Length: 139
Image 1: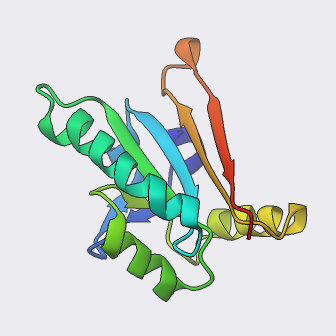
Image 2: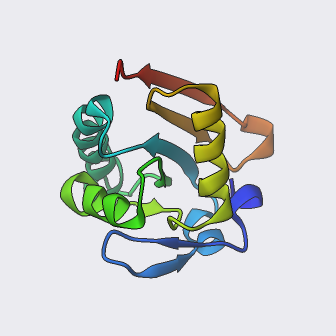
Image 3: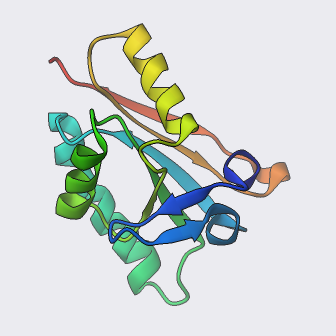
């Protein structure tokens, strides 16, 4: 994942900037695609938050795991509100990042429904794992 996000800056729910390469190096990374207006996203996000806290914040030693939120929200303000309301201490692609915008355009072109998805990958090329979980909302 560092190959894809290297050279980019990520943002925390507090608005702090983090260099992606430093934050994601040697970690399993979950790209979490969701939107605050999507009911399944709002249902699943607290579960992901609890999972993240148990895996990273409470485990000793902490697991080498990081979540990067990729917003499908309609504005930077909606993204920030969703992050501050429900998210854990994970990172996000900034709203105006071209990668985030590209994924939103692809999603919009494929369907008018909001799709929540998560992609997991490890940084070790020999043990690369990729899983996609999709939940479609009806509206």
